[in-house]
Length: 271
Image 1 (tube, one colour):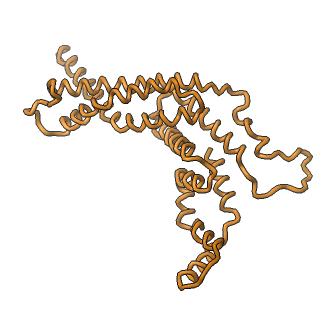
Image 2: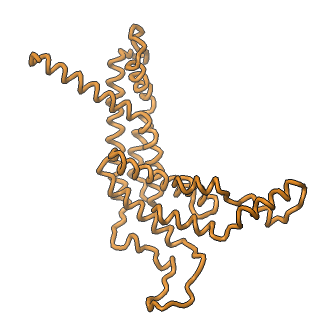
Image 3: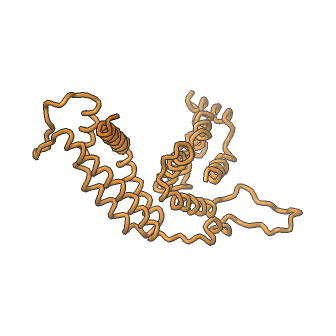
């Protein structure tokens, strides 16, 4: 996907006027000179060295640029950027749930296929010693997904199951946090508890109780998002971002509880 995105960026920049010429036109305009409407647009839309360097370094800068040029929609950009984050998590930190990897890879392939089909070449081969026929990008459409069953309904079921499992884990952690905080029926915690890191973590979890119904509803709603891949991915990504903000505390609480349980077992065994 990065290759496809990078190629689209390069195609958009291929015929850009040199930086030095743009700088001369900008200085001329700033000193009181008048530029035609077309030249003014070229100056304003010019992608300078600083931004090109940023685009070279980060995919989200490339996708932002392609949205501005009308190559990507905002929804496609959001999906691509998040898929890239998933890729980094799986590749560098091994933090991705294994039950979603195949669907995320498929989503990458579907979007890459769409971009390949939309590509507008900056040049065509007029003659070649290669006897193979020239293939247009439009003729390549569906090649990346050829032989692959893109079953959005099945994907929706898997994303739904994944999301429900995560919401349930957060719900269980919230209940445990409220129990440890001594939260009463009015939602207030035991005032005698110390104000330390543990209490603040538990309070942060407890405060998420107000979001649980909404998150559960969003997770259930994924089952009906079957009109398109993007239509499924956007609500999943929105829920994923919300859950990701609290899940580190969920995992930390789980580790603390495991530690306490092991300590109790060791005491019973006389260790």
